[in-house]
View 1 (spheres, rainbow, N blue to C red):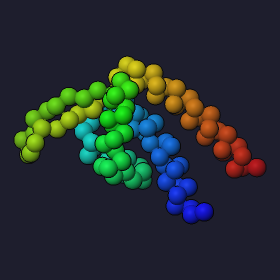
View 2: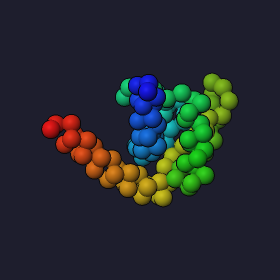
View 3: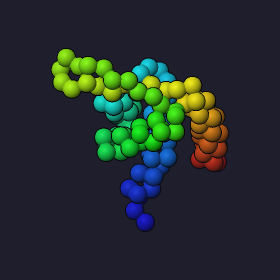
Length: 108
């Protein structure tokens, strides 16, 4: 068993939560989301982010708007929806329970 596979699965498991959390702070376009995650040492590439954003939008957890850009093509800005905020609250509760459990087990 390769450690990199397990580490990748752990990161994928928390990615939805992190994206929703980032977008709960303010609307952003994809490269801003990537930069925010990267600054937290959670490396995500466009090929991972775009399908996830589409899936979250199709689930009505995100919405987007187009904005013209002075430095290139229009940008798609994503924002969290009311349903997305409710979903995020559930994920946050679950994350806190899991984090507490893992911390407790790790400290024994």
